[in-house]
Length: 461
Image: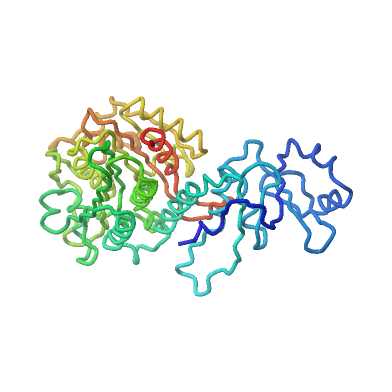
């Protein structure tokens, strides 16, 4: 894990190069005020204030240089990321003001996933001096949580099965004093039959389990966080094509988000009683795999007809959501890489948000906008429950026809949530298909910061 705490320190007048931020709309005015030497350097670099571009401004000596960086007018968490990636090692400070949320991008631009590199990229640290020392811990926690999501999602499924996911959860629980409980074997089959059914085709070493962490004062409001932990999804007997299987190491991205959110709650000592639940499975193929047409009993007592074994995420989440609601939390949040339909509708950047409570939905949306972690609400359109009808059971897990796949998946999950419990579901991609400053191609946290901002606004002292 990258040592983010070493990359941002309080500004006490240490030697550092300055970074001047110039929005494109203010570039002409800024340039007029520069000496001839600086104007010549800007012209040579063809710098025009375009976001994520920079130029080196020479000083009197060879080592006496500073930086001008183009940014969007609004700034934001990624405004400094390109500079952190491009500049040589050393210490830097903004010529005016404080980095604010831009410090997050500065840190994450220096994160590397090098587990599978024979020779990891060698690059010295770029240290940011900040005039907001009180925010350093907060920014480092966010960077650590985001990096945890990225590292877990980027890890190959051969190295991250249900057992390894449980170990990752245990490491977080141990770090912050949480209590972990893992249910598997006969106890899983009896108590969480859908989780068991989805994962039973995997080898013994990759057997399914439900991971639970409890943390915090029982007197505080109980908050449940649930994450889909399908460590690899072959599609089951409704097998995916090769192209559809290629990125399925990331199908535990919901679990990665849930675990990262739990780490934020615990590290900040948010006054809540946290209940983290991760159903961890591999949707494999064997003679014992669950089949299309099977009818599964659920923890809640409903019976589910299997219309498609590749709609397995909602099955494992159903049992976990039912378990979460048994403890009567004040709210439930779940994260899942649940449907391709969400990506067709909203693309890779926008998690789909569903909620059964208008206040909760508004709070998450406001938090997302405030910290530039965007998402988009879709409706729990009740007339579409007709699509989930089964001829032989209470509900079908995968209606045919291809319409409203994201909504029908959320409506399926809603069947396992107590009607009186505020609940939000984030259907997130957990993956970035193309690199952006501070956000490399690969696993990424999408919706994590929005959820944390909402929780911290609600429950912080």
